[in-house]
Amino acid sequence: MAAASDQRALASTLTDRGDAEFAQLFAVRGVSPTATWRDLYDAAEALLEPTAVGRALDALPAAAAYALTTAVTTGTPVAESARADLAARALATADGEVFQAVGDAVRERLPITDPPIAARPASTPDDDAAAAERAFTSAASLADVLLLCLEAPLGRIGSGTLGAVDRRRLVEAGAIAHAEDADPLIEVAEAGGLLVGRERTWLVTRSAREWLHATTAVRWETLALRLRDALPEGLRSPGGGWISAAEWPSAYPFLRSWPASAEQWRRRWVAWGLFTPLGAEPTWVTPLARGEGVDADVWAKMLPTEVDRLYLQNDLTAIAPGPLAPELDVRLRTMANRESRAQATSYRFTASTIGAAITAGETAESLREFLESVSLTGLPQPLAYVIESTAARHGQIRVGRDDDAGLTRVTSDDPAAIATIAVDQALRSLGLQRETDDLISRVPVDSVYWALADARYPVIAVDGAGSTRTLDRSRIAEDPIAEPATQKYAALLARLRSGGSDGDAAWLERELDQAVRARAVVDVVVSLPDGSTRTFRLEATGLGGGRLRGRDRGADVERTLPLRSIVSVHPVL
Image (cartoon, rainbow, N blue to C red; front, side, top):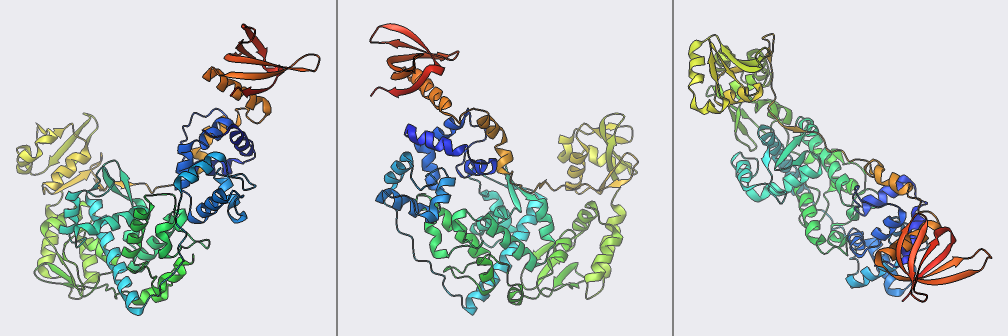
């Protein structure tokens, strides 16, 4: 347990902190906003508890950790360069004196290894080329992952990683070459705010949808900057970049599990082309590592040339003679299946893919206009026929809300289509029932619509006026926004500020309360009316109404002493 003098010293320094400093301390120390502390002395006691100190040491970056260790082992104040940091974390005083509980915790963790010599290996032209290829491949693969996640959320198991079923799904779709390639991409997407975990699923964020329509260079640079911002404190350099890869494994000397976490971060950097496998930084990454921007000119020269035209063929396929520009690729894949991804990417159109595009909001005219604008061979007659015939059939089935009945209504001008849907066993879960020439269901409109679309019926959604409306099936998550620390801890800060814990009287009352709780024997020094003092040795039994009650063992009587008359209290050892 922390020494009482340390608790009092820390509590007194806490009173001088502004709300922003206070909240930052709580955030760094991992304090719960629902902590039940009543006053600053409660806060000081909790912050100096061995478990809390242990967590604080785990989160201590290398420079501060070594300064603290040196101070503890030599019995000297903390070096001036680290005093402000350690004081802000409530591990030492502003004068560099280490709190007793902190010193005890450090001694239990010794020895810790000396910091490694920082080294930044040089990158060769071959390293640059290989890193650029990894960066390009990773950006394309991540885009594929996000597009698949838009179709259906990816599964997330208890450990927070991707499930085996979805790993196979990504491999089969060509998004990744091997199942183990999924983890670094998911980690990069999460750290960059493109994916967020929600219970048992990964969901695409709103900013990810914008990211998908950017060029490859912008995709990579945007996420590289976000990854740098997401780096743990111990990996960042004073200039806003990051420290040498050689220093990453020892960035948190007190945290036993850190080397494994450092390896995860290194793997992300390698996958995104920010590191070579040996820890060198490619030429265009060097400014980024210093805290500046990307050297866009050098980076752009390393990328394969993207194309904005393709060949449309009579067999309902499209061939891009190189990597297709991302924005075109994203739109093309709403109307065709991608069959291969290489330097020459191929796509295949079918009645189903064209129908899905129309379901998503395209029209025959918009499809023709887009394909003619990107085709080097015009619009082949077979493809034009599929577009026209599919568009003509589309909309035979209409799904809308019957507000009067409070039900979903399925209508069609083709009685045979209604009859087919009514007996389709795959749609039994919708509970469709005949009502004259229509079908009705208690299931919401969106669910009925997508069930019919998945069953390949030419369905459209309509509003109350009968006009077509587009439904978006994608589950989109809001971009993660970090709650300001002052807002997060506002209620706790208000309670501590109103606790009246900034004076000797408050500290005295706290000591008496602890003595009562422990039924401890204490020496209570009381000021008498004549100005003299007298010491009573009591077994503390109660505190309330501005009075202390206790049994005087020497006189064998129960005494009640007013708190305003008590000068000090000392435990009997």
